[in-house]
Image 1 (cartoon, rainbow over the protein chains, first blue to last red):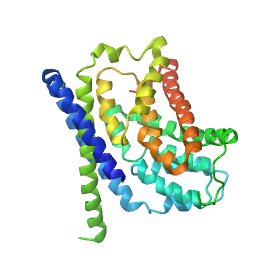
Image 2: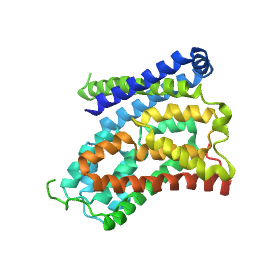
Image 3: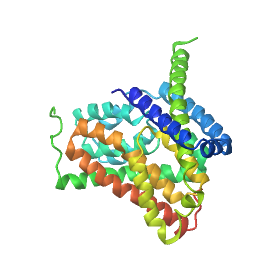
Image 4: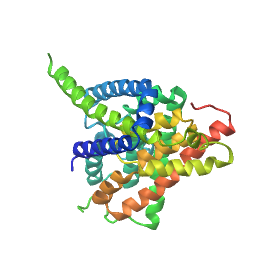
Length: 174
Length: 146
């Protein structure tokens, strides 16, 4: 199932559950909606800003930028990977094909895990949501934390791989 | 109109439809669930000696919350209105971002059970550390994150 279809199914499921909860107690749920109209509008507006930022990144950042950067041989890749992940827009589902390509090119799995973690934790489209709902200090903490958690994710993966090695060696088709 | 402008408008339009649909269904869901949760229930979630327990609960919620990133923010907004503390919010966001049911299924399919076993274990450690780091910063050093 493509990620678009998956997102659509998830959205429909959430609406379905909301409909059931509303049918069970219309007064309670409609009161919650009435009390939070401003919040609903705020979140909807923040989403517009998030999409605008994603569009800008989509247009101006070259698509093969990450592949070129992570394909280099360097001991600093583990630190570069989460930083590149943080800068990469798009849903995490769209990142898996990039990871498969990089894996085939010989990029080590722990570096790819660091990249995946950085990308999943925070990205350009998350910034308006976090800034608008949670504030600047929270966002700053999350960005710094995402970098360190990305590096740590790579190190943990490398450490755990000593106990449970990857099934396939690098550069070999699975 | 240049080719780049056309591409930008097309990307903006399709992304906006997709994301607004997700965000609005997410907030309707979060508000519908919140209508059934007593406000004091969430407020009691996040302070003092119960913080580590709260972080684990929040982490569990994050790991089990399926779907794209945009869906989690309406939930966070509603929980925050209910008084959820910053470390718990960090734990939910971290857990939901790095491992959740839909990601686990895809990663299992693409990279196999060894990969997903290591990813799940490290995700639990990372989300816990993230929550504890936020708790130390806010309670230990007195830095307010929200």
